[in-house]
Length: 173
Image 1 (cartoon, one colour):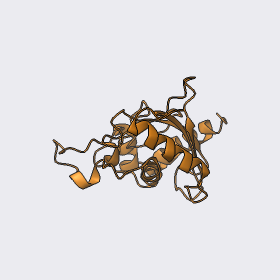
Image 2 (image 1 turned 60 degrees about the vertical axis):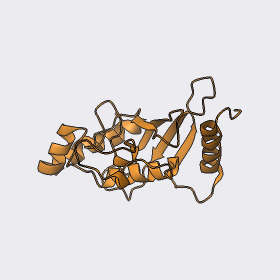
Image 3 (image 1 turned 180 degrees about the vertical axis):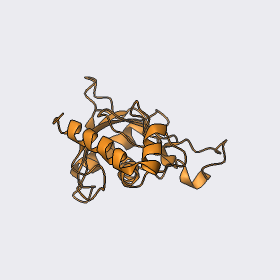
Image 4 (image 1 turned 30 degrees about the vertical axis):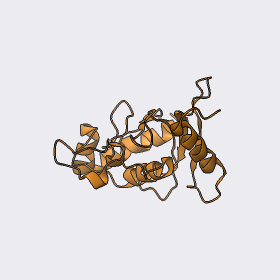
């Protein structure tokens, strides 16, 4: 896994730190995606959500972080590979969260520049933000309109759909 660019070197160090640091986030496992070519720009992440997370607790959700060659100047993309029902996750699994939006002015005026991607963000801060997002969805600008509608208007049905996702993530359905 030779570092051939500054981005590759940084990602290699960040991955190693997340894999070996005892102070890293509990319940998160990171490694290179199994693409056969040891591509440092493609990570597989497993989020083992603690029971403290109101809706998704107990779930094991697999996701992929895809970093651009311009990292850390541009954000990675995050996509859940395990199906997950959430207002800020598109039905195809793509995560829609402010810190993963490019560091430019929001043409809709919804997000301030300080909420968007900054090179000080790390894979660890991204994953912390995603875990926080799971507990506290932003239904003001939903990626999944159906999930946002249920979150607002039928919490019982929202919880039922989420619990199904949790069971599926555990291979129970």
